[in-house]
Image 1 (cartoon, rainbow, N blue to C red):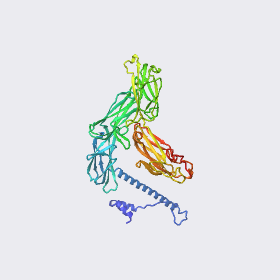
Image 2 (image 1 turned 30 degrees about the horizontal axis):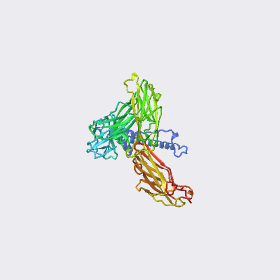
Image 3 (image 1 turned 90 degrees about the horizontal axis):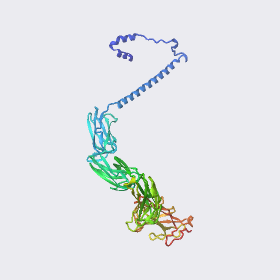
Image 4 (image 1 turned 135 degrees about the horizontal axis):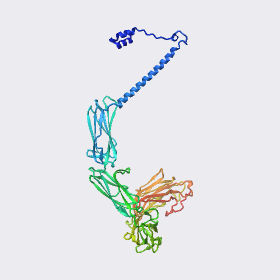
Length: 631
């Protein structure tokens, strides 16, 4: 039976046999005009419909094939989307814990997960991501949480549920938020692809159990020395580790000392602060500013990262104080900006500023200033505005008798008084106690003519200004041929083609303050050779052949070196071999040398230089001629 007949039998089966028989008996004729009937034996034009029909059928087949392929691709994409995107999850995953927490409290985070599919889950892996400043407590120890914790888990059977618990402490500021994320990766049995379930939970810090309180006067006089007390405490049930306290001082505050001492600039190390623990930091300093100006002191407790100099605060606090408005005000200062350090041999010019801050004129005002310091040359003092030096009190006095401006100072009126003197070129250092010198300038103002409205008002004021003295540093040196420390050889004056060696000597003397980070640097010309011989033999001196640099890395030079005991010295040997172009000229042995250091007392930079040394050695006891090269 033909395939078509078999299909008809299948479609109609027993109940449709009669209908099938009727259909077979029917005749179907296709009626076409005679002019359209093709004849194989006709000419070329007569047979034209055949190829046209073939082309149309080919085009139709291509269109149908394109539609079919499009449907296949669309169906495949839809299947993948439905399978991978809308398929039910095989696991449930949650994060359970309180959302509102206290900074630093111990918190247990529970992460339950369950296989809710009918197939085992293979290669299960749990990853947990914590916010910054989280610490993990485990096995009696506590450590900083890594960015991501990954745990490999054995296979999960269908319906199996497990629980992961982690004890942590989250740190941060009040109202700060952090998120914990959990991801469970797995592979269903008999499936090659891996899938991931995710969960997250937000935590918010509602309280920081740390506190800071300040003890500082509400008002401060201009330049007044004051002791600030900063108290810190914890009412947490847990210990805060590696804490530090940071203080930001307002402009115009001069830090002098503290107990305990700073561990870094503005940073005090607290360490561990236990439950109910507390402490206090005492800071001494002075404040300058405009009358009535508000000064804000800010502090915080947190973690200070000493390697990166970065700060993570947990709790902040601030307090304010006010510069008092003094009815009758006086201040002494150096005229050159706001310098607080002077040097030996300086010409110093001081200004004493006074001002009437009341609403009434003040009569018969007098100002008395005293300047003290062993380095001062009092005989060089000159005084302006009619002031006189009172020898018994060793102070300068201005009054209405010698200065018209002090007879009556109007409301809001002010003026300046001045004097100048020099400091000694060489500080008087006779013992180890003669170190870290200072100049003290104390000023006092008062009015004897007090108006009725101001009776009972204190119309006096005192001011103290302190100026540190930089250490005097002498950097000297010379080039020698005749040297007891290093033996030299070769013709003197040097001759063309022949080698001559010289000794270069450097010497340092330091008077009143320790120096730190001290070093001397110079370079050798390309036609000068480093001999590698120096004394003392343990001197920290080195030579870089590629750059020609000689470096004497000293470090610390204590006060009095070269004054109370021998100077700090080093000597090294260099060699020259002149050429014809050098004839008649002195050769350079070493270029300019520079000594750089930092004064430990005044924090000022120290820099001294020596000129280049040449083959002319005027300090040599034997060979001190011109040093010009001979043929």
